[in-house]
Length: 487
Image (cartoon, rainbow, N blue to C red; front, side, top):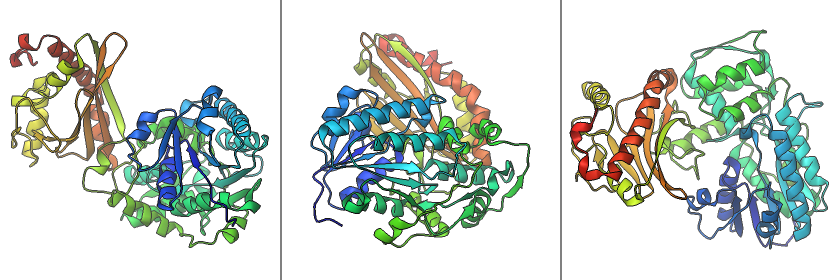
């Protein structure tokens, strides 16, 4: 390694899974870190001490020169898989803009995290990751590319797809891709490589495959994970299911964002294995095998050691259970109103007072009665105050876990249910009015958690829209609305 210390390490794409973890890791190493994302509010919520936050969109070249100013090394961690079928073109344009801006600002190094690719990859996702590396290398700033397969860590999309499949399906009829081979890598091993590689002069302009010590089929990965959590799924591969067909029903089974999961599944028709281990010789470390890496990921969930969830919600608020999905199913309703944020907030804080839940009161009563019969807290707890709330307060079977006056009220569901849930009220200022949104996040626990979600989803679509509308009405004329209005 060189003796030169990087002046500033920029994590470009710091709100994503790897970016969030990498910022934490670099901080623990005593590095000077700058974090960038399109949405700087997401980064502010991380509360990273001593990290400079910058907002930039790689599709907007004018913003890149400012965000790259004074940077020595930039970690390029953005991708657009969630954007749908157009993501390869978006990723290519973003990479061209970034390479040009890095050249103008005189960066010493770009570190890009790509994906392991077979010869002649058929997957659009894998070809796009490969093309992004080629575009970055076409600039004058030296690029070091690390190519990784499945990352074993809480929140990794590929890992969470595996977890959801095992947790939710006692019997799986799968495509033949379950026999494709992969070389997964533990999150902590990948972070060590990312942190150390820009300090190697010899790594400039190089591309390295990074992987753990095990080469496994996806069937073996699922069975090994199942063994760790005490499950014995039956996996039946059939020739008629292609990855594309399987991606359509995947949205019913996993809570991983659908476009991301679909892009990942498309890359499973070929073996994706590391073919070069040069970086393991340059940066020696204890590489975790799959079982160790999976146990570490479960333990991180259990200890709530995650720097950030892509969806901040209930899994970090309840007692850990390995069957909980990391990503949340979501449903929401909203209403626009001329009422002030203060009046909307005052109305939201009366939610649940004296059994008044604003809309479809009979439906709320039935659900509370079921919870009471099951031994849950419904009907058994009283509010501390009918109009005021604070973090920790209980509202029947709900508990206040986040309280941001005039902006957001977040309630943790403590009813008896097969999963973990959150109900959130948000107030957003628009140009001439306010929008109030009522949104539910649900982390299903196993097959019963999924069935519970889909059974209640039609009601949720009506309930949350009606609740938002009724809240807006009460905020406009709070003195005219009586509790008896509750349907």
